Length: 342
Image (cartoon, rainbow, N blue to C red; front, side, top):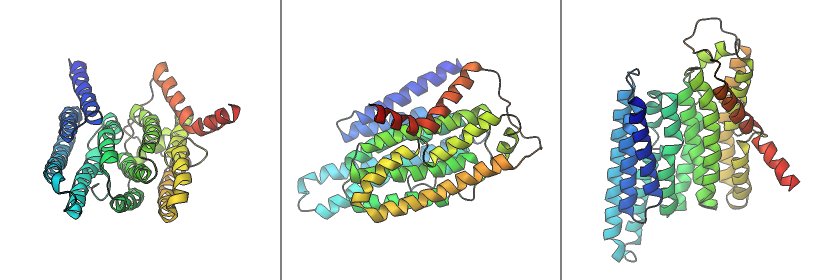
């Protein structure tokens, strides 16, 4: 019964996203966002997690506020469409309001205040859904509705800055990945200046890297940095994969995570060099705290008892973890070999 209950809400959540990205009207997109919201909230609530109720209420309030502003902006845009030439400045403000509501749903800075707090009250599976799948519908609407490059430029600068600075002083891995997600949102939004569809490639690779990391963290029930220290004394190979996956998520060459950043660097170097340099410097800060995690977890040995689940002998899960880790680490090398071969 519990599995059926989960499957129903997962299917309606996917249906809401499909409705949004395939809608021809603003009302249809809004309806898909609401179906997605009302389907994800029951998935957050868990009996064995006392913080899940608080996270679900916070998520509902934030998303309901964003949906209200979105619908209000759409109604004003439609009502003012006949006077667009006379009220061009007002129409630009209305589109900024609409984009701000979508950015609030997305969790981009400066509308990011809810994102790390809500992820802290979830398990790894729900955190994975919120960091990846729940971004598809807002990013699709945003790619259709961006009218001002200046506005999106400010959002890119703030997202990359806050996403890199916010993760420096964290001990929770969920918050570290949340701030990393905010930084990656800035990189995805930068594709709107170059090519509006390039974000799909970035998003797919980011989702795969997040999946490979969260599979390991979820299997060992690791939520804090302290819990990673005991892991090295028992599972050297998995620990090695986890560290390299984190470096790949940070965009360190020659790992797979560098490939989407490489595409954006090549394109932005011709269009907006100053923005590119700022984004690269902020990404170096994210790499700094990933390297700090890697160095601490490998070099420091902790003999205290931690609440950590020892890996069982499930061959399929172990094989899946090894496969995703191998692809996320060596994906760029394999891609380069294939390009040169063909």
